[in-house]
Length: 178
Image 1 (cartoon, rainbow, N blue to C red):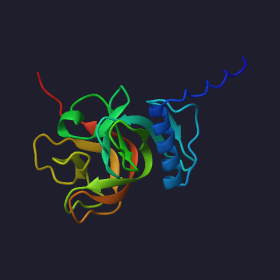
Image 2 (cartoon, rainbow, N blue to C red):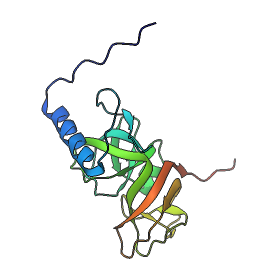
Image 3 (cartoon, rainbow, N blue to C red):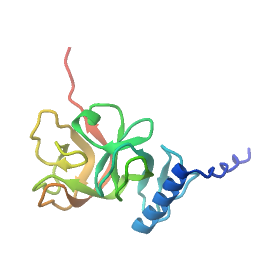
């Protein structure tokens, strides 16, 4: 059978223009071309370096490097203890986002992330009391371990950026016994 026809062009409206602007900024920031169909919420794309990106609408502002919780609706927010306890997936903001803007977060590949004070490289990472920041210390029983992400550099101060690698990260939730 012939391949399906390409998707129709995106309608012109201010919200989608924000998405196009964010994509253009992300392309300039990463130096890579993202390929795939149209740019709708929850679309995923692969870059030329094997990384994967997820298109989201920011339900809260993101800082560069924030660990972002992506809800099934495609809305994303910096991860918190409460969000990590709910269904969703994880990405990392590679540019800052304003609330209600659309853009890409990275779910696979080399990433910039934010770490807690004195967060070490090559150790387990956990949610922290600061939204969007991962840490190697579990100062709260509410913290969740984030599997599938490793920092390759350390953060000396709270909220500083670190480099690392994400391999489809997910939250490790404690099991409960009956």
